[in-house]
Length: 255
Ligand code: NAI
Image (cartoon, rainbow, N blue to C red; front, side, top):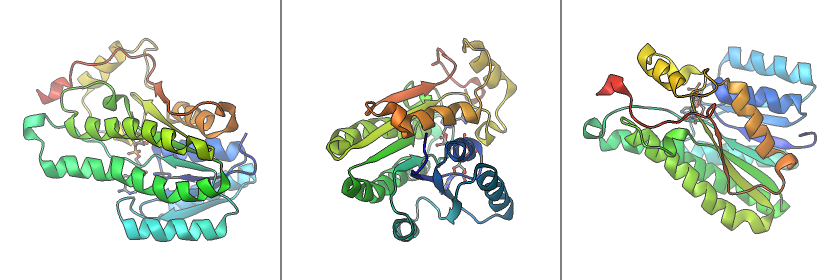
């Protein structure tokens, strides 16, 4: 499905990002796997995935909020790839704090990592895609950006900005053959849920028709669909991957 395509995936060292690397490699993509810090374990894992799928996967390291490092990396990727066809903006951080307890600093951090970094990287990469008149950008948002929940002021606002900006980018880039979509995962088994109380997890499961957490691979499959030509007439959309949860209400541990 992705043979001959080159993809950039951020937050590729674990969770949804690593599952996306695996799923894209299985479909034949050449991958630039972005992580914040060098790690032998990560590089070993990438070699394993690359060898078993006979594709090229190159690790690159930068903090998504460091504009100079991002720019330099994109330049290097541009020089070393015949095209940049797919960008998956996946890196993100989560946080929960009631509105009255949330500092502006915290909101700024959520905005910088989850939203502004996606904007910046998309701007740089879309220039290559505009020249090629081809590309697919997939932004990882969240159901937290669609439904307000207690404690979600910083994280939810940053993800709402991702969903909104995805739609605007799709409007502006469509005439260049670039599609822009987002995915909004719900309750997915990754490090992001480490340390959360049993009560919160049980509450979410009780509201989820499928009655279980989603896996990173289930999110990666939706990202694959949006990244590939299987979705060639789909742009400006947000696909929800949450087991059909009827959400809202609150995170009781905070109140
Ligand atoms: P995770 O915590 O395992 O992965 C987050 C990734 O982002 C890590 O690779 C981390 O190193 C990277 N990252 C964070 N800050 C960074 C920075 N400043 N520079 C470079 N990389 C940075 O969690 P998960 O679940 O895999 O998260 C991936 C995306 O999915 C995030 O955008 C998250 O908000 C979103 N998401 C996750 C949900 C879940 O239930 N796990 C639900 C909804 C959305």
